[in-house]
Length: 364
Ligand SMILES: NC(=O)c1ccc[n+]([C@@H]2O[C@H](COP(=O)([O-])OP(=O)(O)OC[C@H]3O[C@@H](n4cnc5c(N)ncnc54)[C@H](O)[C@@H]3O)[C@@H](O)[C@H]2O)c1
Image 1: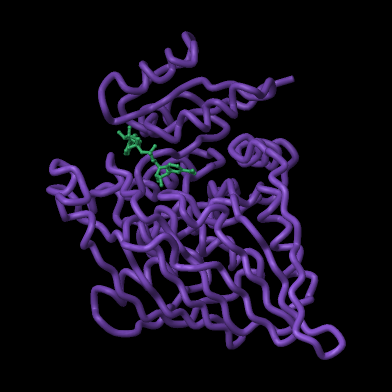
Image 2: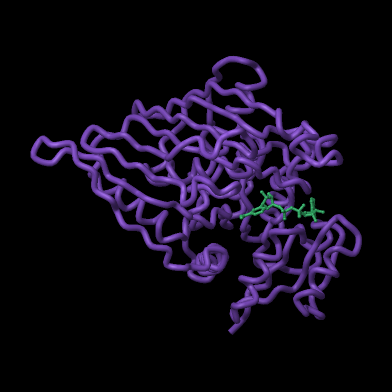
């Protein structure tokens, strides 16, 4: 059997999670890695004992010489689009880390390149593979809530500014909003079937990231993204999405995710509201309760959720490989995530301009 030839673009932190998943597969071969930091790709490949894999300092060189079937794009957010597009133009399928991009126009360019290439692009939202997240979607999709009209989601960390390449605008583009906000958005939008976003009114702050009281001085000096944002989003179908996301704040949680429908409401608690880092958005949701009337009596039904211990990172990478081998559509397609990206782009535009903005997404 011919093995899929896979390359990694960007061999930093998250590339290790991709590699640990690929390592477990015998129908693929990691044949190359590329990173713009000299020597970084070689060191990464050596860590995984891939002596025969080739290292490159540019994605271009790797893509033009290695005859790859697919790539994982694990670069920081600001180079997602350029790397994904180059890979598609070289005839590769793409597993692209979240968030899809920083701005909507870049995400649309990826979709154009994807369509032209006939290859698939899947976005790396591993919480989708958590059984608790699947159960939340199953409850919502069952129709038990009736017509859904209001959603509150987000949450965030009390203290959890990541540092590294996440806090510089030139590299990450956006902060908490895109780093963990994109997960909270995916959790609820995927559950309700990804309706189109129409308008956004938002604010964003950086009070903690720039303050040496809360952030190491060397990080505070280069901090140039958001550490908290709040947004009021109108979705198609008369649905309101009330969103807030934090990397740092003087609060344990901004509350549970709630989904209100005409027949019932669903509340999804964070697994541990006292955790400085955690939140429901990453799949590790805590108590889930259905609020409904029984015999005209307001009733609450707890829905037991168990952590079934899935290896979400493995499943995300494996679903990409399976889609390629079985000629199936992308498991987490750009046609959905473009709406997630459009909201992030809308939040950036609205918070910068100080007023509500329209979301316009051209057909690709
Ligand atoms: N799914 C998850 O749980 C998860 C977790 C962490 C990070 N991420 C995402 O993964 C991405 C990377 O995060 P990270 O923590 O690994 O960052 P990182 O800074 O550790 O690694 C990124 C690497 O990409 C390289 N790079 C940048 N542009 C490049 C280019 N044009 N060509 C080749 N190499 C390039 C950098 O030199 C760096 O080594 C981000 O988009 C982040 O949001 C996802």
